[in-house]
Length: 319
Image (cartoon, rainbow, N blue to C red; front, side):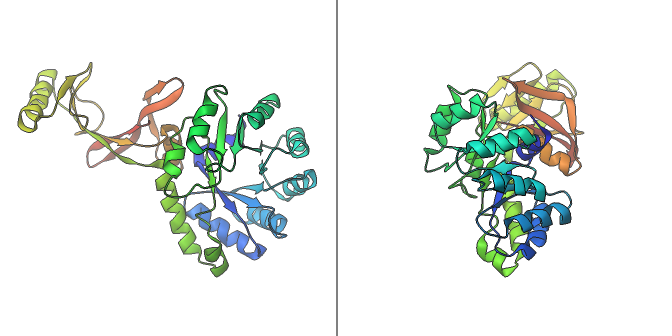
C-alpha cells in the first residue's frame, strides 16, 4: 500500500469539501489541520475546485489534498497537475482509473455492490469508495462484502455523520470514512473557521470512540494480587477470574500478579481501531511500548502508550 493511502487510513476521516470561492481554501485547510483532520477531498462540483486544490496544496503545510467527484480523465489530469495527491470517483470510471494507475496516483472509485468490487479487484485496487454507503445497504452490505472479498478495504461515504461514524470506523474492512458534516456549507460561507475546527475535533473523538475499559492495579506479588481480587469479589460481588499474569474482578478491574507498567498500574482505554488510535497519538508526539503489542488475525488488538497519567500507564484496547 502506498504512503498516501496509508496516511488516509491513519487519519481515518476524509472531509468532502465543496467550495464556491477559492479564497476560502487556505483558511478552511488550516481549520482542518488544527482540528486534527489534515486531509481534504475537494470535489469537482464547482468551478473553483482546481484553484482550491492548488491553494491548499501550496498554502497549507501538512494538509493532504485530493480531488473528488472526478468523472473524466481530463479532470483527473488537471487535478493531479494542481497538486491533488489522490483521486475519488462517485462511481466506476474506466478512463479515470486508467489514468491514475498510469500516473501512480491513488484512486478510489465508487462502488455499491459486488459487481463494482469485482472490477476493482480485477484492476488490482486494494481500497474502494463504498458509495452511497447508507443507501447501498449500510453496514450489513459492507459486512456481506467482507466474506467473498476478504482483505479488500473500503472508504464508505454517504449518510455518515457524527452519530454513526464510530460504528462504521469499527468495522475491520473500513480504511477510512468520508463525509461533509464537519465542513458544513453555512460555516464555510460565513468563514466560521473556529466552528469548523471544533466540529473536526468532535469528529475525531467520535471516530475513535474512546471509552474507559478497565483499571489495572499493580501488586508486589501474586499472593498480594489474589488478596486484592478476593476483596473486590467479597465486598462488591464482582466475579473473579484468574489469568496467567493477572486476575480480573469483573471486566472493570484487573489485578496484576506482579508490578507491570505504570507506577500504580494501568488504565485500559477502548477504541474503535487501535492502529488508527496509535497513529493519532503518534501525531500528538506520544509513542508506544512496542513489546506490548498484541495482534489477532493481523489486526492490532492492544498496545501500551509510552505515557503515564497520574501514575497509571495507558493501555489501548481495540475491538
